[in-house]
Image (tube, rainbow, N blue to C red; front, top):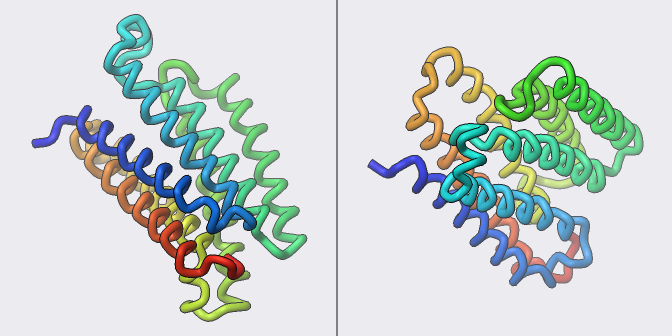
Length: 225
C-alpha cells in the first residue's frame, strides 16, 4: 500500500506539473481574467512543498505541532478560499452578484479573524469553522458563475472556456471535500489512510480539470475564454 507521505508527495508533484503546464500555455490566456488563476496554483505548490519540507526535516516544528502542519493548513484555507472568491467575483457580469461576493469576502475574513482569536486554536488544530463558512460562500459564488454562463451560452460553448474548467475543478474539490471531512470526523474516527487517499483523489480530479482548461486555451487562442 502507498504510504501517506508518498500520497502527499504525489499531490505536490501533480500541483507542480499543472503549474508548469499553465506557465507554458500562459500566452494563450494572458489577455483574459483567467491569467490570475495561475496564482492559486502557485499558492498550492508552495503550500504542498512547504508542508512536505517541515514534515520531513522540521524536527523542532514537528515536536511542537506534530505531523499535521496546522498553521500552514489554516493559512492556506484562508488565503486560497479568499482568492477563489475574489477571482470568481472578477469574472462575474452582474453588479449585484459582484456586491454580494464582495460582502462574502469581508464577512469571511472577519469571521476567520474572530474564529482564530476566540473559538478555535490556530497553531495546533484545523480552523474547521472558517473552512465551512468559506466553502458555503464559495459554493454560492460558483453558482452565480454557472447561472450567468448557462443563461448566455449553450453547454457546448461553456465547456470550451478555460474559466469553466478552473471553476469546475474548484467545485468538485471543495463541494466534495467539505462533507467528506465532517463525515470523516464523525464516522471514520480519524483513519488517516482513508483521509489521505480521498484527499489525493479529489486533488487529482481538481488538477485534471485545471489541465483540461489550460489545454482548451490552445484550441481557442485568440477567442474570448
